[in-house]
Length: 110
Image (cartoon, rainbow, N blue to C red):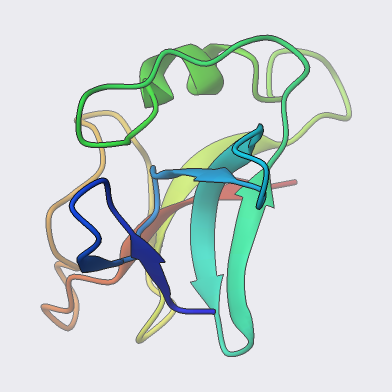
């Protein structure tokens, strides 16, 4: 599954940050990255803030990610093309500084 249908019935690509729903319209979670087989979804118990374009408020998600306590991971960015990783100090880059690819996603590192 690589595309989703928007309210106009048109196909739109699935991207990191988008909220995904089941066939009944129930919110499942937020796309966190793309894989060779499809996409990964972060599932949260609490409600998500979703904008008009169907993207989640990732600031809210990041606050609940691990990294504050001993033994927990932390969030970085990672290029899906070349594997380059970096800190999220200035936010998620629009493209990979190493190879220029736009396939940059948040990545949980432990």
